[in-house]
Length: 135
Image 1 (cartoon, helix red, strand yellow):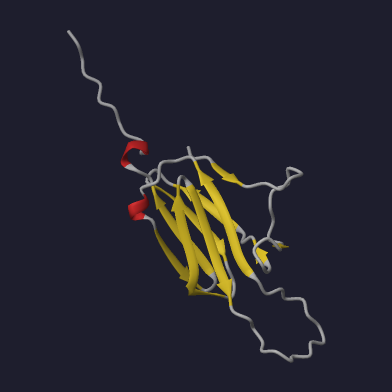
Image 2 (spheres, one colour):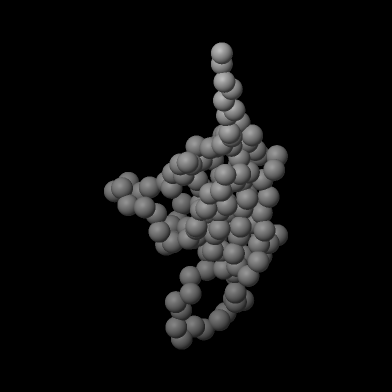
């Protein structure tokens, strides 16, 4: 079974999808689902407003980093009567305990949802051990 550590805030609370100001602008933590099969981990992240060419995914030393840049929705000089939709980039990291075959990682993006496929390396996949009879 895999272990995925979601980085936690100082008070032990799991990070939620709220804005933080650590990277020179607002950055939101996308909500994710992580699924596991015998062959891979699959990460599904909500990243509304991000175009596929504004997504960066890195995997290094068991850490997966996803970043998505959101283009401004409106030009300058707009007079808002109500302003509730926060615009900012998405950023999140995950520490993965499984050995991942980094040469086979691939991702898809459609309708504001990013899906990252993280294939397990052969040495971490479950396998059947043959038992032979001895005399």
